[in-house]
Length: 302
Image (cartoon, rainbow, N blue to C red):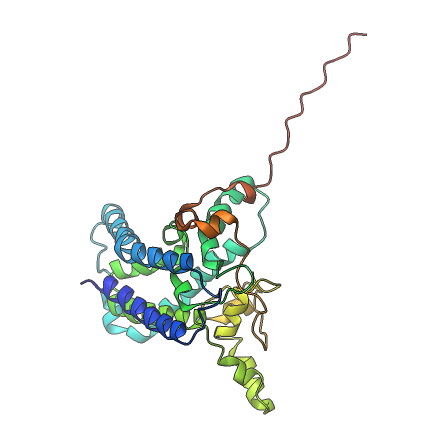
């Protein structure tokens, strides 16, 4: 088993245990999750572990071997001699790159049609991540952590960054950095809202301390609002470091209660077909219609 496999399976194990706890507690019942939600989660996790991560790592290895011969493990000395500062830099860079890709999937439509087409791929690939339960009773569930369309793993630049670092020999940095990032992301997708206890605490200094921490780290309720159907659904795009939401993307939203409604509205086909959710690439609705071609008027002969 490779390090890549180990980290993927450890995070999947945490997600599965948490999902079972949520299911046993009744938080996934009564329309909070549908049968197709569970099927979608199983499909995305299986493909991620068996296909997407190994294929991406293989592609990176083949390309870098041709472009930069001898680059494999060339940065292992950083892993061995400067582990802690390298880990911090890796984590911060990976989260920034992830936030940028995620922000692009949610930001306003660009003017250029070619950019609209690229963004449309991001939007459609990310859309399944925001489908929760039925249209009115859906809830966020930890299994949503990995739920995306089939292209998401191939187009998000942070996944390439992670595995390039692994190829270059930052094995321990990759292991710990990806584990911390993955587990924190899973906990913000879980149906937990422990941070509200501190946001609404009767002591002012506790509320202020929690408010300050929420400007640095992403807590569950912040990400719940990203999955809510309301004014914050395009905010809180960073899964771990809210610092970037605050200072770079201007997408920070801190609320003191849960969202009223979760999940984007689903079309009938999305509700009924897991394969359609996963493979849908109908980009049309995300593109500005092309301006009609107007033929020049013929010159008058009169």
